[in-house]
Image 1: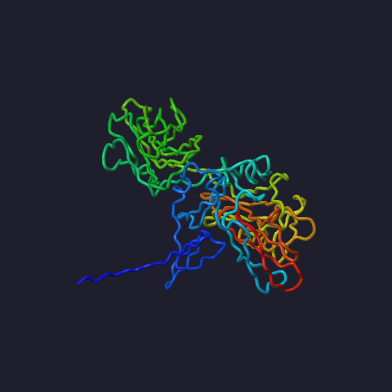
Image 2 (image 1 turned 45 degrees about the vertical axis):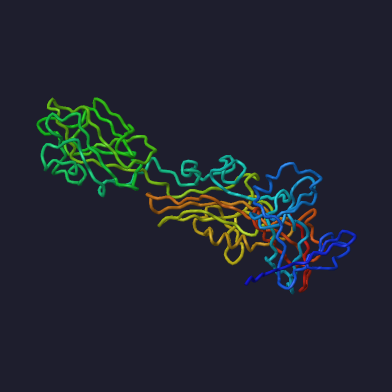
Length: 470
């Protein structure tokens, strides 16, 4: 027995060349009229990736209207006789119900808009380009040019060349090229005890004494001390190189001394300053000569010091190139900074071209002097909140920023990395609002756009908003 299953769809063609699928009476104005039939079905047109779609060769005006579905953008595209165009890049409509006077709605969204906006952003960055505030030193008056600087494009307090911290050794490990006996090992030179010492093997010169501060604990050593042992023979170093390394293989000379034959006192530390701006994990005293004929070198005690960071310093914008403009259109600011324990960054702003400085405390308050920033300056969180809620009246305002860096610990510095000012922008040209009573602006420059609709009509209104996207 044979069972035959059949299925069918009906195609009808009339004399005027209309074609109907599942439709015996196709629409007279349609070349093809498709009815889903007894089940819900759709039409699948050719599906191509963006790469495949744009790779179709030889398109001309003859292919005007050619359509495909792009599987990457998830939208339909058609060829408009000269180029591919995305379906839907036209008028969009959003209904906003009962928007109170002065209220803002952020629900209007559209795809990326490029090449239309005259986007102007204000970015304060210490080290990127001369177009941004806090970048070009010529734009700033620094309270003391020796106190503030840039490190990796970040504003920091500098080291005070005249102030040294306490001995940095103590928690690391010491090794040496040799020692004459167990009671004369390398660690004896770093134990703050003048009753013992490191001493190399007899005839062990040249010799070296090395200190490892440990991984992640590199130091910028700019001063070291040596306490010698004189005894019946002068065991004090005569010729040496103080050098640093971060891999314990390649060492960089920091300080070289030759023929140091006088000025030594047994068990008394002698200070040597050096010019060093690099942080090293390893430091080594390489001795090539001593003040005796026995080729025996000793060090009773050795210390290493870093310079202290300056305790305070202030950056201030000094010309109009470094002002943030159109404060009335600022919707937010973001500040990137680091404040380790016992450090802080405080801020003042000026709305009158730096004639006066202000801080926010329930309202904008005039500072008696820029020098008061240490006590009344705002934190970054306070400044961010105050600027975001500031609505200037009259002429659109400008503002300048002063930033005050402070530390109570000479070992660490706060940093000011970046201040970004984000603007709203009112629509113009083909993006003009279609009736009065509200303003519309966007939050983002690229990517998915969020439009900010604000009711300025004086009363609660229902809006139907038409806008274009591309």
